[in-house]
Amino acid sequence: MSETERAEEVRLAVYGGFARIGRAPGAAELAARTGFDNREVRQALELLHRTRALVIDTATGDIVMAHPFSSVPLGFSVMGSRTLWWGGCAWDSFAIPHLLRDEPDVLVATRCPACDAPHAWVARRDTPPPGDQVAHFLVPVTHMWDDVVRTCGHQRLFCSTGCVDAWLKRTGRERGYVMDLPTLWRLARGWYDGRLERGHVRRDPSSAAAHFAAAGLRGPFWGLPSD
Image (tube, rainbow, N blue to C red):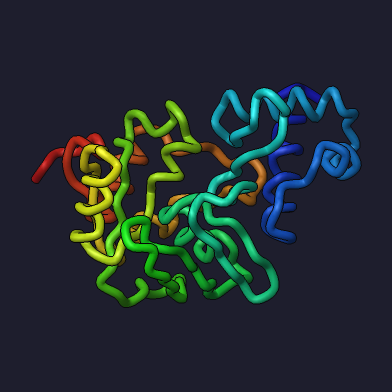
């Protein structure tokens, strides 16, 4: 079996673990599930990290993220019928019911970073959740993978644009991109299609741009025209 084939088996085992029990399998679990030894598992994880199929802590080898799942809390919890996940960000939290066909809806919960007000939505596959809240994404698409954990940690949901402005003023950060809940839902819908299946291939730049445009996103933040 080639290194690429082993990596695909490990990727499927990681995603399967997240989907079933809400967390990433450890190295011993991955070895037991795939039949590979620890060295082969580590090499596979490193390859998956380099190709952006997973995010690992390069110091420890631990799995940090397998989008839309996260091993670390980044502001969101996502509750299904039997499983609790950390949502990696606003985008990923709303994407989980679109990826997991056995979960027709999930409960997404968070707090406004500006005023700490609690928010929760039932996120479904068929329609956007109601609400006047807005999402603020800090990091533009061309730099999202420079530090992907920081990027995901700053894709948050706020009570309103007023709360976004207050948070930006308090933290000294520049305004990123603000979208309403229906736009966020369209962005999340279908973005991770196929991640649980063998042979999944990440979107190329043209496919990603087409998805962003179809969701209603505009402007250079997304690598798109402004009109």
